Image 1 (cartoon, rainbow, N blue to C red):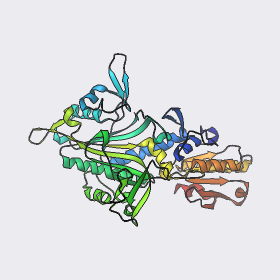
Image 2 (spheres, rainbow, N blue to C red):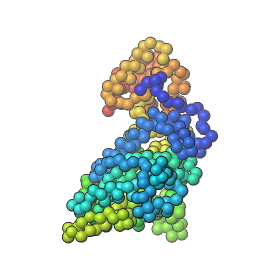
Image 3 (cartoon, helix red, strand yellow):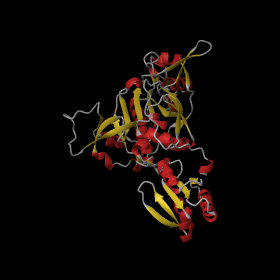
Image 4 (cartoon, one colour):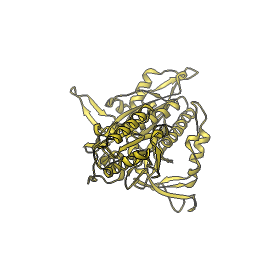
Length: 437
């Protein structure tokens, strides 16, 4: 993509309303723009990141045996009245009345709707277990939306729902999602700590939230440094595997948010206790028959008797992850994107746009990178070199290539790693092959 033809409205100054790093940088890099309080348009650069995150989430859900579908954003109040949550959910739910006087709502979550689909279509234990998920925009009318996409009112979410015959089978489905989440976040370059959590309005008695460490995190967290020895990507689960030993490894270590932590009775010594700040990026629940029982979602067991199915729900804030990654990976100059979710892998800068040979060579590098499948943002604009370097650091692409007249004379370009800041000279003819590998 040539920057001269791209829609990338960057800002030199930080908007006054941006209080945290991710909000500042998402506005400055032209990733998002606010339409109303807590509601954002995702501009081209931001959308590319969002799609990368979504793809990783989808791949790990599919590997764990979940099946993708799509449910509507607008739901009937009748389903929520059946479950008993319509009045209990509170003012965060946006309630709507259509032209016929029917009460509707903009879904904040989908337990009721998926339970209704299940009870209509699945009648036998032979069709279990099953886990259905979708990636869909949600709305929760936060009383004080703030921090950009980290606490917005409209957000993109992956929510999955498992259905099992017995509580024991339900825990197996829960464990599969537990491991899938650890892998998902690790693939994005994030260190996520699972913490036992309050189930809140979702219900049930088994729940974990996944916290990413970030200096500007919403709450203080405390955890055992033993988490450092675990590598989620070393686990290659297959659908149906017994994952309890892996989950036991992670949950055996101490981890607590500030609300749950007690300095006096903490089981971890000061030498082994790490303190930091964290951002929640995922939450999983096992709630048994909380929804299936009142809504009549049962199947016939092997003896032909009706059994209320055991359910779990599993949420990942897809749009929130974009902000969380920035919170965990940035410096004074801008974003530092992990390669897996970067909007482009490479930023190519023509430092001699008025020089015919320099422009021709940069055009050739650009074409070669594209031919090798390398996503490249080519700054071909007629602006100063300083502005180009500043802009590339701000956007935070993993690699930067800079070519000017002096480098052209020597047959080399400068290659910079955004994470380490390391620079090296690379032969112009070798650039595309090096970055493609």
